[in-house]
Amino acid sequence: MSRSVWLSRLPNIISAFRLLAAPVLLAMAAGHMHDAFAWLLVPALLSDMLDGWLARKLRCESSLGSLLDSLADTLLMVVIIISIWFLHPVVYQQHWPLIATVVVVWSTAHLLALLRYGRLASYHTRLLQTGIVLFALFALVLFTHGFVPWMLYLAGIFSLIGAIEHFALLVLLPEWTPNIRGGLLELLRKRSRSESDT
Image 1 (cartoon, rainbow, N blue to C red):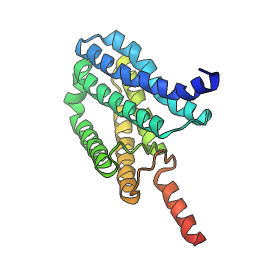
Image 2 (image 1 turned 120 degrees about the vertical axis):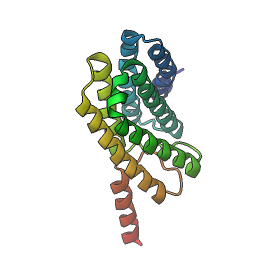
Image 3 (image 1 turned 30 degrees about the vertical axis):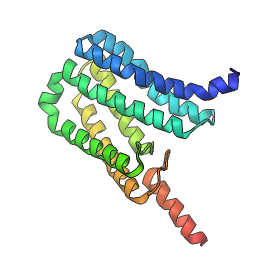
Image 4 (image 1 turned 135 degrees about the horizontal axis):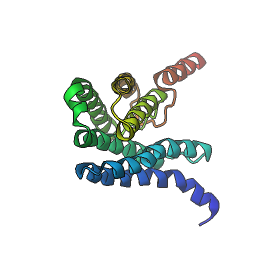
């Protein structure tokens, strides 16, 4: 395999690592292996930032890569949410309304995307990515140092705002359109330009 081919596959390999790490993390959390969980969580979360950046840098973004990244992101977030219950149940006991709201809203968003497109939306908007990064930072601090409530609420607020944008994009995009970095504003600008050109 040539170096260029290997490099073009590297982002998908990193996403696959995150996908494979998720069930291992869940097993560790269920077994209350807190330290081992934290050690594996760090590279899994870092891989989330690395695969998309590499794909853009190497100019090898693809539909498969977008889907793999979305699936790995979703699975990892679900595993973290479940793992919090195993390793830090006090977070749920004291802050369940926020967590339940975010879980229900995003479960609905993913279900609607599957019904509309037959696959995860894979929009990868900056707003959504901000919510994921904030939640990842919250999880990282939680599992390595302890619970910081304001980080949970900041991540929750951005996640809910990102979900609103996600619902708007679902309404406006009849066909599967991955990697809309600028989100709703980018889409509206493109539509405005195309209308002014006609």
